[in-house]
Length: 92
Image (cartoon, rainbow, N blue to C red; front, side):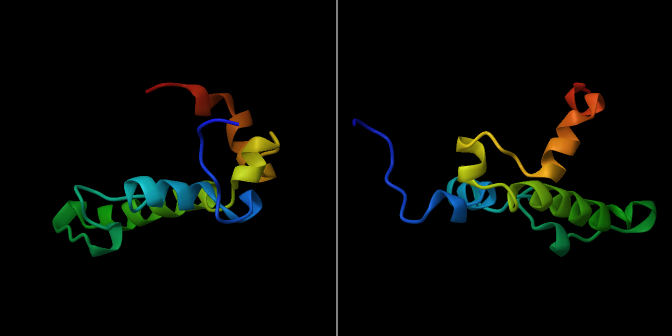
């Protein structure tokens, strides 16, 4: 075997969120700021809550999908349901 990486943990214990955080840092930043630390005023005040919801949506996929899921080609049911929606494939 040549190249690659040796995992320190079982692939079933490593989520995609773990990998992304190790490579890129937090899952959801807005201009380098964590969503819960943002402050908006006036008509944009609800944007903080929107960004927190976006982070929660990312977590619901990335923290619940493991390297073993990907390698075994068996994604979690809720992830498969999301990608079964043809609208998810539309580029906007």
